Length: 143
Length: 390
Image (cartoon, rainbow over all chains, first blue to last red; front, side, top):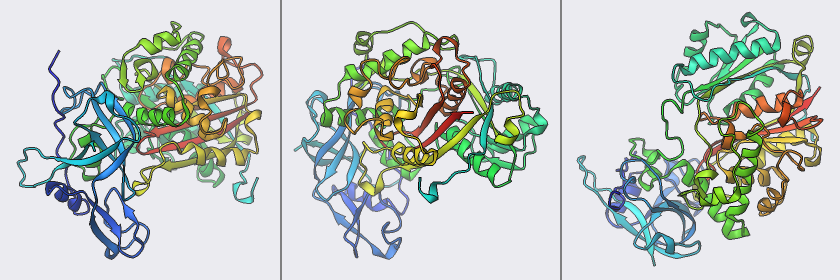
């Protein structure tokens, strides 16, 4: 039996549309897109404000990083690199205070202690890159 | 029935074929499709020269894939549709074929699927979540999203809100295995118990190994034509009475995981057909996982949200029950070569023609088939058909 490791998150790749999110994470900030006219948040990021289809309506907002677990699963089997030896790991949807529901991992606690409705707070995991980017991956820990 | 849902009832399924193999290391996808085409043409009493519409998708066909398939079969159809919306594609192809035939764009539509998922050892449910240079995939890949994990998150939420239990999900697996024991072609035929499911290892909580579909090779073919043409052919025509398709996704960060595409496509199909749930004699429901069946039955309106656990219990979805589901044993026990939609239609047609032997639903007149493509906890498509015995 291989010893359990931390998740080695596959490196995120950004288009210009999603660069703000991953660069923000690299600074330790959870950056969300919002429509400056309607106030509507949107996730995942995209090149237009989706309710007006207008790129000029986009603005970027630093979220509080606080949220609650909407649902989760303790994954015991995933052959993919970065996860195979990290099982069991927790994949979850977290409801952010600002509204969006984001896919993430819950770390920093026993997987069996995760529950729906649990308060969590964002943390940011960076890895070694060879492309000069300073991205990180937002994950969540118990608040 | 509202005016915008009026649907001409002049389309029929004239031939079907399910490849008998569950493991074909000596065949290619296209060979399996070709053998299925021959089987469905024989079933209908048609020849390859009659085919003027070609529909198909597979796990490996990419851009130009449908053209490669046409070349492999040496067909030169007038209408070509290689749309791929996941495992539901072939249910949706029936919708598209009906539209094309009604518009006069083709007359005999051949729908094909083939796969060697098992002999190629494709890890369909648990092999995802690796790195990808696609920026969009960077919102799931870094978090270890798997197919089974996506469905597991649906199940976890459902259990939290409604008290649904693992034992109730296990009942679905047990029922499918009982059906498979009556199907000579099914891959897994030895009966199992709720305890067997509960004691199988947890793959992604709360889903156990036996909550997951099997992986097989296989393929199938469907021939759609006008009812006028079909009634002169060899097989008893099965009428298309209603159809619908839909997508559900992340909704820019506001997904309600428990509302799936079946809600939209099912209401549309049943509205077109003018049928109620009580009218249906059986349902073919894509069963990638046990939770998929529960989620689909709720969203199709067979029961209220949250009541799915009770609905699937007590033999209600078994042969002889109120709504037999997947008499062939489904993807949980008969076959699941990566994309299962085509078998939903094939089994519905065979049931309505009364050809299913020990697993026949007595007097089946009306059937619903619903395919799910993709993953219900992330993004997916749904396609629904209502089919009727002539």
